[in-house]
Length: 317
Image (cartoon, rainbow, N blue to C red; front, top):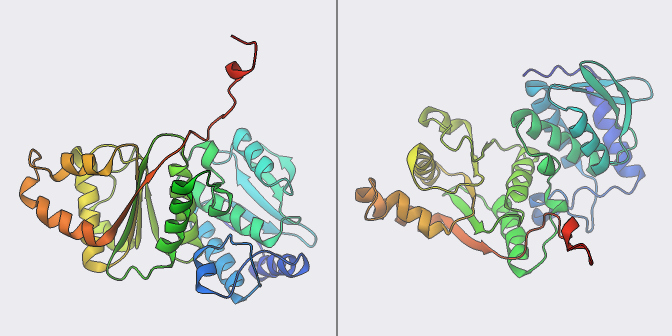
C-alpha cells in the first residue's frame, strides 16, 4: 500500500510546534529518561526533538499509505477507507475527540487535525504509521501508547518501568524483555506502544504477531534493530526457528527484543531447546545468550477487558 503525501512539510511541522508552544504542550523533557518515553507529562519543554519526531513519522507515512494535505486554514489528513474503515474511524474520533471528521467519501475520510495538541498529533500519526504497516491490528489496540497504559498493580508497573528502560538502553550488546502472564493484562498494548515509541525515535522495529511469527527471513535481519514478538505462545515449529535466529542476530550485532506470551517462558524454552526438543544439541548455547540479554517478568492481575460485563449487574441472574 503506497501513501502519497501532498502538503507543505514545513507547514505541518510549524503547525505542530505552534500548537505545542501555544498550549504549553506536553511533549519532551530534556532528560534522557524523557527521550525514552515521549508520552511523559512532567516538566515538558518543546525542543528540536519535536521537529525530528514529526519529520520521521511523515517520512514513514510517505512510504506506506495515507494522504496528508494542507490548505491555508486546515490541516487535513485523508485516510483511505481500505485502511481506516468506518469502525476504525469512529474509534480514532473517540480516542482523539479534537479530531474533526470533515467528509466521508467513497475512497477516503477527510480529517482535520488543527485542534490536536502536539502530543496528540504525534500519537495519532504514529497510530497511522503502525496501522499502515500492520493493517490487521486489533481495533482495541489501534491507539495503544505508553501514555495510555494504566498499571493496576505492582507487576504491571514493573512492566511499564522495564519497557521505558528497554527503550533507553543502548542495546549495542543485545537487550531483551520477556513478559508472560494471562490474557487481558495489556501485553499486546505494550507491544504495539513500544513499536510506536521506537518509530518515534527513528528505529526500525519489526512487529511480529501470532499469525506471522515465522515471517522473518535471515537475509532480512539487518534491516531492523528492534524485534517485537507478540503472543508468542508456542516453542514449536518455524516460529521458534525465527525467534532463535533473531536471538543470535541481536546477540552478535546488537539490537532489542520484546516478547509477550501467555505461557511461562521457561516452558516455551523447554519446547524449543530442551532435552526432548529437536534443537537440544544447541540448547546450552541459546540459553547462555538469552541469560545475558533477557529480563523476564511475570504479569499478574485481572483482565482489563470489560471489568463490568452485562451479566454481572445485580438481579440479572
